[in-house]
Image (cartoon, rainbow, N blue to C red; front, side):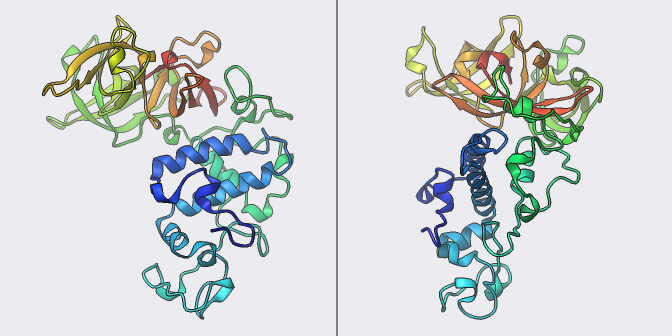
Length: 367
């Protein structure tokens, strides 16, 4: 329920409390709205306040204790000064805050526009973290010290020109010079994270490893060229390790949604397991259960017919309009069925290391 003009956190993110949205849904909602209302992109009156509001709502709902307090008591539980005596900071008297960290003295200072403007979330820093775990350096200092965000003209560590630019981006290019700062290469959201399950495919010199499954231990980076980046994989069967190029790895256990099949229209909209990728034919191999049959049916489908889920790491391939993005690692953030485009975050490396958020067709993204 709104309190003092503040909207419900779930409503701010376009979600419903009764749906009990999980981490992935929260991230998806935050990213979509944060891009829409970022003050370097959206110059409309009120966009800056909405950008702050979105950051605050995500910060609350992504923290289990703050979310539990908000779910039970609304904004009254999260206002400043909620500890000690009954009803502090506007909290109705008699509320029992037991069960939260610190017992009855649970306090959360929200980043909303009250008091001195201080808060626990810096919306610019959160934005940068959510779009690639950037090296923020000295950027930001809490919302109270941000001044006019719309006058920043770009944030150190993130290229807003490419983030909001054309060539598949989100619209008008922000004014002011582009500023770059090296990102944390090993921490880029576009890379396959340590501990992720993968399958080896397409090895020519050591084909005996094709089809083997394992976990990524770490990424071995050549800071000068992302195309030379390799991963150390520890295999499940014997614990041995192998250095493998990104294009020879496929995230394991992925479920895709079949779409646009002409010969098997009965399968459109169905879920399928991604099994392999046939480089010679440029087609995925998937398995799908049809009807009551016990064994899954194996199919060969094009990249555009297997819609990958959010948070899937991919490699950009076959892009004609921006060939400099080919062979770069990226992370799928969202899929728009209307435009048939992924929104992806690309961890650009080389001489100018930055994050680039663009719209790409599924045919340009290889899992």
